[in-house]
Structure formats: C-alpha cells, structure tokens
Image (cartoon, rainbow, N blue to C red; front, side, top):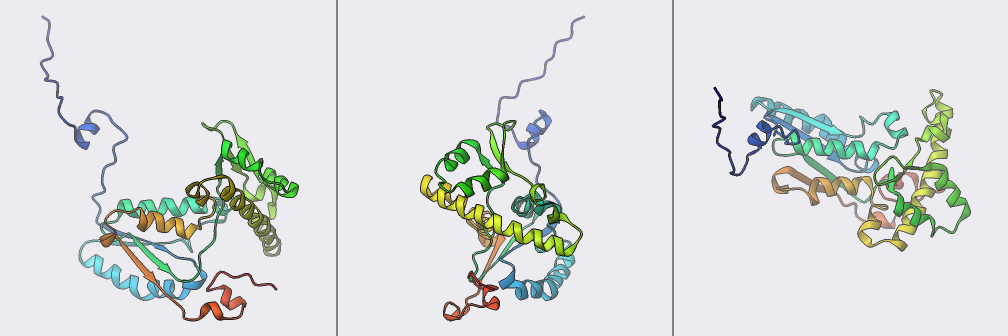
Length: 271
C-alpha cells in the first residue's frame, strides 16, 4: 500500500522559530539570561581616577542592586584583558569591538558608558587592508624609506577573497616585543612605537589625498572614537542603553607642555 504525505505546505511568513525548525543555523536566538553587561569606553590616562572610582564605589553598589532584582552585573574594562599575545598580533581594536558587541547583545538595558575629556586617543592603523586600496596608496607614497617600512610590515594574503594586505605580528620583526626580559621588552616597545607612528602618519596622509572622507576616516579614527560609533552613534535606543559623560578642564589649552599635561590632552613632549 502506498502512503501519501498529506502534510500541508506552509507558505506564510516564517518566524525565527520556524527558521530554526527548517534548519537555518544563522538565526540568532536572543539571550534569556538576566544580565546587565557594561562596556566602559574612554582614553586611559586622563580618566584613570574616574574609572577607578566607578570600579571601587559605583559598580559594587550596582552589582548589589542588580542581584536584588535577580540580575547579574558585569563590567568590561579594556585596561585589563588584552594580553601581550593579542597586542603582538594587532588584535587590540578587534577585541575591543568584539567585547562591545557582546555587551550590546547580552545586556538587558544599559550596555555602554563613555567617559570623554580632552584626549582624542590612540589611532591604530588597520590590521588588514584591501589589496587594491593598499596598492593604490603605495603608488602615491614618495618616500623610499616609508615604502620600505610598509613593505616590511605588510604582506599580501592571496588566499583571502578578495586579497588583502596583512600586517605581521610585531615579534616577527622585533622578537623582544614578547621577551620576558623587562629591559629588552621596553626597548622593543620603543622601537615598535616609533615605527608604528611612522606607518600611521603615512597611511593617514595618503588616505586623505586619495580617498573620500568616509573611507579616509577609517585610517585616522582613534580606537575610542570607533567605540563611540559602535556604542552610541550607530546604536539603537540610546536613551536606555548608553551613558555619555563629558568632563571639561578649564584653560587646559593654555598650559605649558609637560609630561603631566600629556596625560590629559594630546600634545608632544620632548624629553
């Protein structure tokens, strides 16, 4: 006897649950955990005392308050959490953005606190650059020394689709960057800081000349600004998920350059 399948075909709109039943593994299921997870964003040296105060005084009280309501309270502070191995492989910015996305995804309500003052913050050149853009930039760099520096640090990855240029781990050219010897490690960090600043300046200059403002901005934007874009500017329901705190120090622009001042505003201090 032949058995016929009498199941009725469903042609209506599908819910996420329907998609899961149909085998769609790309559907994201919202978390049912009761978690408040906060990403703290700021430049480090000028807001050190504020961040410490939050950690020591405000966050413990918030944790107790959340626990009374059955919620878990978590804080992401990137001053602690980026290992040397990640810095060596230029993953710091990617880790920050990954943590920010996790806060937005998991947190019930608030997920982002921004502390801003006079510092713009560290600008990190891209770990990967599309091959066509990178090669176009190389064509417009006149300094032979800078071309050699860029070719030293960036290599083409033809396995990527489309191809990209990827920056080498720092220890590939400066092995002591991951040394256990403190003096060697500090010397390696000084060397890398000098070379990375030169790379950053060259990429910023040529990007502004060759690309539109939006594309060029990707080579100039600081890590902190990138976090603010992800946490506030491009976020939904910011009134319920974000807190932005702005501190202004009067007459700071009129002060003489010093090491202490450089901790609170972007200046160059010659030692």
